[in-house]
Amino acid sequence: MTSGSPRTTSGPARQEHQQENNPLFWLTGLVVGIALQLFTLLVEPPLGMNEMAWRCAGLAMMMAIFWSVEILPTAITALLPLILSPLLGLASLDKAAAPYAHPVIFLFMGGFVLGLAMERWNLHSRIALRIMMVMGTGEKRLVLGFMIATALISMWVSNTATTIMMLPIGLSVTSMIRHQGKMSRGFPIALLLSIAYGASIGGFGTLIGTPPNALLVAFLQEQYGIQIGFAHWLIIGLPASIIMLAITGVWLGYFGYRLSGEENHVVRESIKEQQKLNGSMSGAEKAVTAIFLLTALAWIIRPWVSDIIPWLELSDTTIALIATVTLFILPASFKKLEFLMSWKEMRRLPWDVLLLFGGGLSLAAMIRRTGLADWIAGSLNILGDMPPLMAIALVVTIIIFLTEVTSNTATTAAFLPPLGALAISLGMDPAILAIPAAIAASCAFMLPVATPPNAIVYGSGMLPIRHMVRSGMVLNLAGIVIITLLCHWLVEFII
Image (cartoon, rainbow, N blue to C red; front, side):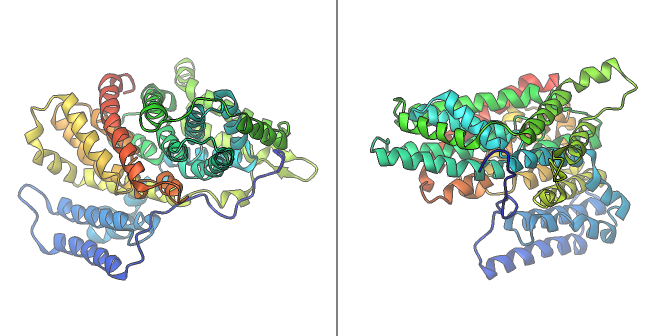
């Protein structure tokens, strides 16, 4: 396929975490979730908690179980606040529905559309091949090159789609080296892990890289009036990604596995051949690249533009939507009246993720509005004398290991309200605990079920789970230290 042709796919690049097809397991989760909600309606609330907060706790527990066990598709569970909030007296339908149209949701939608445009015109593959040529073709350099390429693409394209795109390239490289008879035993494992980990680490590098980031920004803006823009997020997200990538590269290339540093000329020639097949950049690719670069630049300089022209109401969401509309206006082929993006491509947009945002924000708003967040914070007053650094470390540790078995977005949605209230009760800005929690939610490295990239590479059949657990534990511990220290030092610069 030449780069001038749109990339076709059979469906959305998404990977759902599905439990085993066990009717008893499903039925147990359904009954327990509903029973918890009914319990809060039939039993008096705990001491110090009002009735509305108690009902909200039941809704939160039921949604948490439904999300964790996947009783319903995650997007359908996210619609429960629209049904139950009015019925339980927690909020009117208007108030419950408002978070589903939060500006940050449209910001993320714009990011998704940019990613789809890159995929459609095969731009992401061109970027990946170029990075691998620059990095080199020794085993150590290939692992590092694959990880960096995956991370850079994952900053703008969903981590699931990025992993699906990079995995076949990685398997092809592994097969070539194996046929030469020069492959180190640990190379295939290290390469697959570099793809999975690169996708997760790259995700928290930018504001639109992963759902927990957007959920955090919307929560802080909606509940506390704290605005974090694209450029502000780079202050903490980019260093966190770079440091974690460096640690991961050193572990996979030097300590976890003994890899060769010798250049592989067969692989280099294969990459060159693929680049020749891609051909020179088409007009469509150049146009998408220009829109992508201008959008990223606009996101970065927006704070300074707003200072210079204070009457201009320019937000990151506005920039994303301008880019989205532009992709539908500029033609890829004027004669065929084919545009850079079409509505057919939009069918691959992960609408379920956008609904999940809305459900998480709606639930978070009710947790705070009913006083449940304050009650939880008050119950944790034993932490009152804990230094901020220790409080951040505790939060990061809990979230990192919890998100190994739960949805990172659902975990973020459930923890942000009580963490915000807890931070205030400890005399801290709510962002000081909320930001590290959101970043930690993306650091799931140990288990295949933890995140779609892990599940996708594990599904190749070439990655024993014990290797993922071993390397994942190392990165989890490194993540606890890095996220804790960076957030302790840098959060004050972005709030």
